[in-house]
Amino acid sequence: MASIRKLEKHQARTAYLFITPTVLLFTVFTVIPVVMALYLSFTNYDVLSRNDWIGFDNYRRLIEDSLLWKTFRNVFLYSIIFVPLNILISLLLGILLSRSWRGVKLFRTLNYLPTLTSAVAAATVWIWLLHPEFGLVNGLLSYVGITGPAWLSETRTAMLSIIMLTLWQSVGSNMIIYLAGLQGVPDYLYESARLDGANKLDCFRYITWPQLRPTTFLVSTMAIIGALQLFDQAFVLTQGGPANMTKTPVYLIYQQGFNQLQMGYASAQAFVLAVAILIFSLINMRITKAEESIV
Image 1 (spheres, helix red, strand yellow):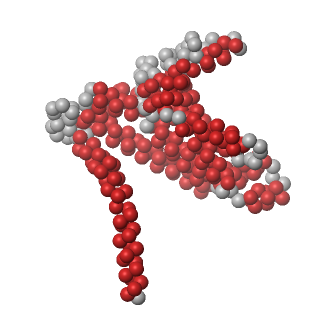
Image 2 (spheres, rainbow, N blue to C red):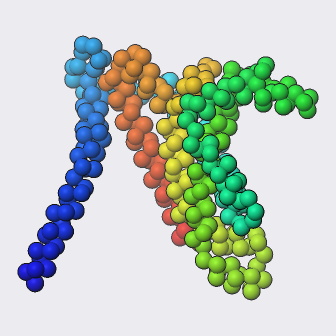
Image 3 (cartoon, rainbow, N blue to C red):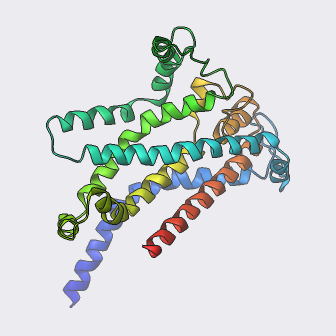
């Protein structure tokens, strides 16, 4: 008995030894910065001189900041288009490329490659693709008699341009997630359904989709968080324009903190954004659980 306890203590010490570097890195680069940002959100810190405690003034200022709420409206409109399309396209690609046909591995690789591309590099290429005069997209549209818009300069198409770019970059990784989910669906469920006379649509509705609910929850949650944290594409493609139609909360935080040096106010905005991400993630979790209980 004593030898067993000695072995357990040795294993515990070894485990703590291995996790200590990770815990230290997490503390230094995550916990401490978050605590410091929380403190700064109650100050008027401007990097250069002031760092006075002002209480909840920054948060009261947020309530009257119309530009901040406009950025949230922008990402909301972005999300209601981006998230469903992301799930739909990723799922369709996953189903299509889950079959064992010749060259399927090549197509999986080609669909995943955009995920590996830097967001800034991809956005730079898309600036050329969406150029109103020399861009490939408008060039292709002209062949069918359609005059393409100035994609990045018009209020009605600027956000759509960002959605196209982010979809192009994100569906590949989500396709891989759905592929893994599809491979986890037991074959005997489909065999039993076919014996009962179920067609392909019935198999998808009553077997595939319910089995993929955890996967869809993961994909949708990641898409929602990514939408609320949208920055690179808006920064490179449109600089938040035209007329602030593509300005996002993260972009606004960047401008407040690094352009206007209002670090205290930017920290308060960052915590509001963090709370928004938490709320939408919890809502998505509740919706998923409610659908599972219905099933």
